[in-house]
Amino acid sequence: MRGAELGRQVAEGREMGEADEFRREPAKSGPDEAVLSLAYRDLTDVSNYVADQHGARVEYLDLSHNKIRNLQFLARFDRLTTLVLDHNRLTSSSIPPPLPRLKTVWINHNNVKDLAPFLRALRYNCPNILHLSLIGNPAVPALVSGSSRGVFYRYRILVLTYFPRLLSLDQQRVEAWERPDSDTLWAKVTSPDSWRQVQRQVSVTASDVADKVSTTVGHGFDMVATWWEARKADADARPPVPRNTFV
Image (cartoon, rainbow, N blue to C red):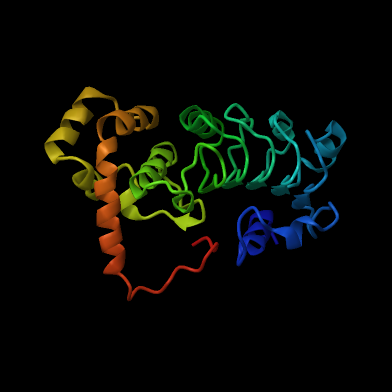
C-alpha cells in the first residue's frame, strides 16, 4: 500500500489537525516504510540521521505538534506526497524546499500572518498540491470567529489563484465557480466589461490575478457569498459530502 493511500485512510472521518489516535502512536515507519510519524516529539527540526535513513522512502510524513520553524530539512524527503505540519511554529517565511510530488499539505494552527507571499513561495516550490489546509492561522478567516462570508470567500479565491487545481481547501471541496477561470464567478463579482478591461491591463498569472482580485473586485465578494448561499439552498437534494473525506 502506497504512502498517499495510507494517508488518505488516516484522514477519513476525523478533523484535520486533530488526529490524536494516529499521532500518539510511537514514531515509526508504516508497513512499507512509506509512512513516518514524528508527532509529539518537541522537535525543532529533523536530524540528518533520520532524514538519511528514511527520506528516500517516505511518502507520508507527520510532523504535527512539534516546534518546527524551518523546513529546509525536507529536501531529503523528495518522495513526499503528504505532509502534516499542524500545530508547529511555522510563519509566512517557513516554506518547504522544492517537493514536486507533494499533493496534500496540512499547515493548520501555525503562525502564518502574511498570506500572499507565503502562497506565492509555496506554489513555486510545491506546484502540484491538490489538498491544502491552513485552518487556525492568523491570516485565515473563519466564519465561526466572526469573519463575514465575503471575507471568507475572498480568502478562498485568493488561495485558488495560486493553486487553481486544488480539489479541497480547509476541509471543504473546491466548487467549480470558485476557480479563477470561472466565468460564473467573475460574472457575479463584477461586470463582464470590467473584467475584460482587467484582462487587457494585466498578464493573467497567479500573482497578477491575486493582486487584482484584492484591489479591483474585492468589494464584490459579498455578492458572491449571497449568491452562493442561495445556490446551496436550492441544492438540498444533492447527497451530502462526507466531512473530511477527500473526493
